[in-house]
Length: 99
Image (tube, rainbow, N blue to C red; front, side):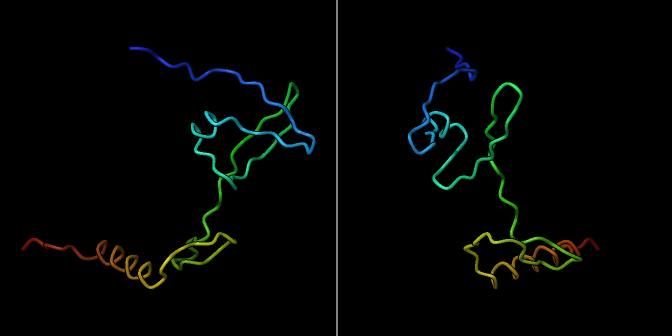
């Protein structure tokens, strides 16, 4: 049995247009895909790249679902609303009430 160390370094180069390529092992480890947004933060001894977590486009405000943001959701709204109603009703009514 062997143990893989997750602490390793890789060297990458900046191209003529100022771009860098994130090596495949790092993309695989952090599930980075084309279009993933990263945040670059300057630090005293270098820079830090962090994954920007997308915000939910549907949030609950005063008990009502509200679309908030620009995230495109491939969602059947009618099915979603029916599922939410079923879940809400399930919380209020027991399926098999005891006598």
